[in-house]
Length: 253
Image (cartoon, rainbow, N blue to C red; front, side):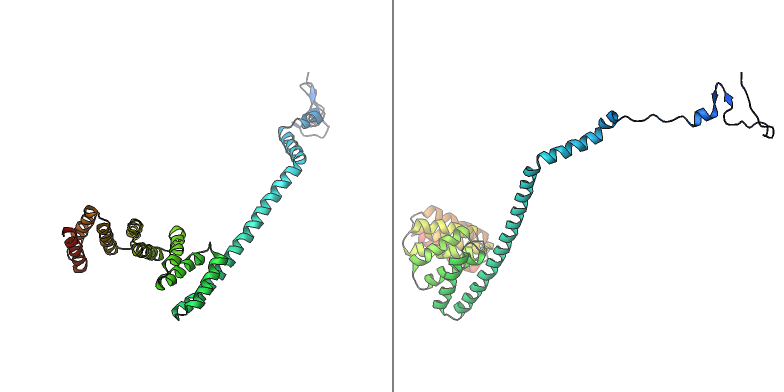
């Protein structure tokens, strides 16, 4: 049975709150409270549990992570100081080398040597330090003091980076070893000189020098092969042809 309580002045078709409909009042539907979430259910929330787990882990490992952060900061700071120090050393070395080059240009070898040696002693592992070794070697070479020049050239050959200076170093070492009648080492460094040639023509001239050294060392076959290769590649180069013909004549004699 459905009851309808209507006020005497209520329009027909409108229902009052509290009017039974199907055994339940409209107010019952509107005022029914929502189900509360228990504390146990909140504690089991996966997101909250993960946050709590991370927080607990960080608390337990606080000292460990602090050490890691401090170590990273220390490495960063030390690296910054090292780079700044390297830049400062490089600039100082280049300034001293520049002074030495001025003295070399003035043919003041004594003062040039003082500055070059300072660069080597204080900044040996810089580019300027390695270049200073080359220039000291050149000064000794020009003086004919081959035994003093050779160690400087050998160090530059091992560590130098300038291709032009490297080629000059190998040629200087060839001349030194040849003057000592050490043809094996002269041939060794002449081959290195060929590898560091800056052009095909320069390589051809270096190959003819190697042919000359090979001939002096008794290896006519190697000398002839080198000469033939140069003649084939530079038929129209009169200078190379003339030098090649001169070596060929000595091979046949």
